[in-house]
Image (tube, rainbow, N blue to C red; front, side):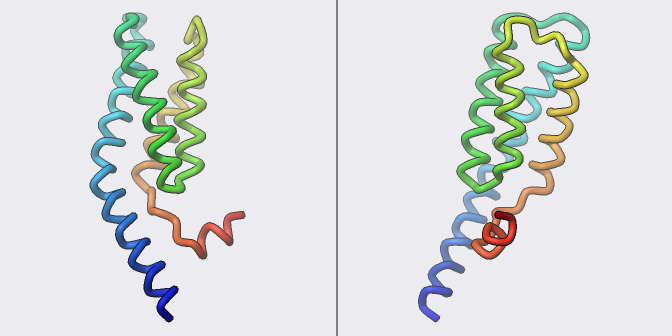
Length: 119
C-alpha cells in the first residue's frame, strides 16, 4: 500500500509540474505557429528561424520529460525540418505543427499503468 501511495504522490506532483509548464509549452507552440505564418508568406528571417528552432528543441525535450513521447517526437520532427537549409515544405510543417497543438492540448501525464499498456 505504501508503494502505491508514493506512486500516487509522484504522479500528482508530476501533474502539478505539467500544469505549471503547459502555458510555456503553448507559448513555444505559438512561436512555431508564428514562424509557420511567416514561412507561408515568405517573410522568414534568421532570427525567426532561430527562435522557432529553439522552441521546437525545447518542446521536444520538455514534452519527453513528461512522458509525452508522441508530442516530443513531433516537436523533434519540426526541429529537424527547421535544421534543413531550405524549409520549403510548408504543408509538412503545417501538418506537424497542427498535430503538435492537438497533442499538447490533449496531453495528460501518463500513469505507470498507461505506460505499460502503451508499450
